[in-house]
Amino acid sequence: MAEVNCCSGQGGGNLTPGENFYWVNNQTTSDVTVSGCSAWCTASSYDVPKQVGSTPGKTAAQVKSPLSAGEYSYSQSGCITPTQPHVTVKGK
Image (cartoon, rainbow, N blue to C red; front, top):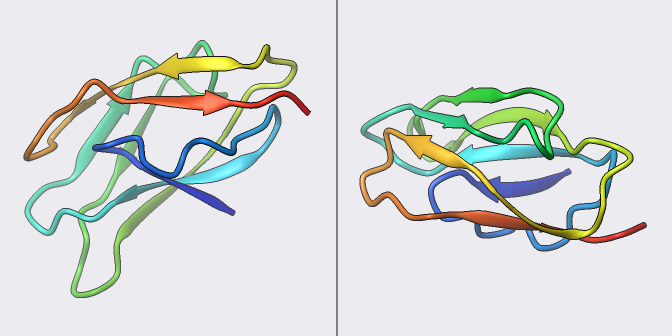
């Protein structure tokens, strides 16, 4: 499954409608809450646990379908260096 870094949005450029993916948290100090993604995800928020040892925290998610191709944003809390992340959803 595809992986999207919840703090940076990196890795989210290849998502397609209906695709399952993981929100990934590489921080070792705090869990992250992803919110504001109900326009393009099947849930409105996700809790992503912090990394433990060398294993990143992961939470499964799914892109809505049908969904138009485009850039979609979301919010996050708990990131050490918060950004204004977005992901790109490509058409099938």
